[in-house]
Image (cartoon, rainbow, N blue to C red; front, side):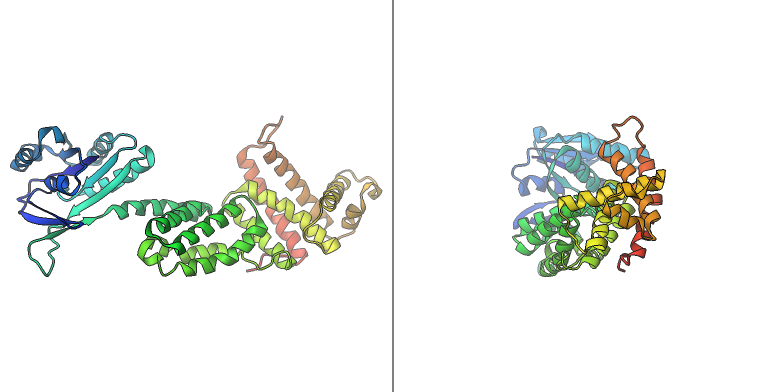
Length: 408
């Protein structure tokens, strides 16, 4: 195990530090690390030029064997460039997969901030295990005893950066899987079945959204709120960063909820339209276009037959009818070339809107499905623009005509 610590030029007072029931009396906290962490092998002490020539460092060298203490020079940190140098030196001393202890007791100015950033970086980039981040709180004097000083374990605050990253991912992409895994992991670590279940359900729900499973999304969204409520007693204790996200998650995902979506056809189509818009707002074009095409087929089937979940042959007949409608509108041949679905659609006042929509959907969807491996593919920006400016407006207009506007 490796330790990273700091030292200053202050006149540190001798006190007894207490960490998880263990005590160590010293005026130089880096010395106490070997008492509190018996597996600590090497301590890297980061020292400015002033510290390198100060008696504090000499005293520390007298107390820690030379083979276990390595002094690492760092600049004073009086410019942005020097701060980057300190960050680089900190991270360079840690190898892939190592266990590390950070001590910020005698650090100064912006060093604690850099330590937390370095810890987060090392966890993500080098899979380093942060065993502990500690701070010997000299100023914190227990009322019952004027001498012992507590050592604060700040390790949970490193994981706060994970929560922030997961929250950011959720807010900007709608993907809550990372957030859900943190919640489930915390439930596992704390022995909280409620947190673990909430994390699992949130991950399942988010996966259903990412994989474009609208019926599953509607069903799971309805259960998600209840699961989060059951976990609400444990969240403030064991997953405090998640507490502020509950309202945002319920607002973001709750509007997709629908009990028995197969029975409530109109509401189901309205929720699906909302989900299509949700995808498009986050530039998830593949999901938006995939679901939009299925929505049109399903909506036509509902209009003509009152059915919602269509059999394969029924879907094929509707798709052929829509394609035939587009063909007729483009080339003006005889409507007799249409199948019965196309002929019925041809007589509707929304035939032009439906034809334009199906044309746009077919072009974009085919390009997406072929992953651009065609003779004349659209670039990614154009695919996104066509979805936003051609498909969505036509889809919303058709929904308006059929009374299927997104419920607000």
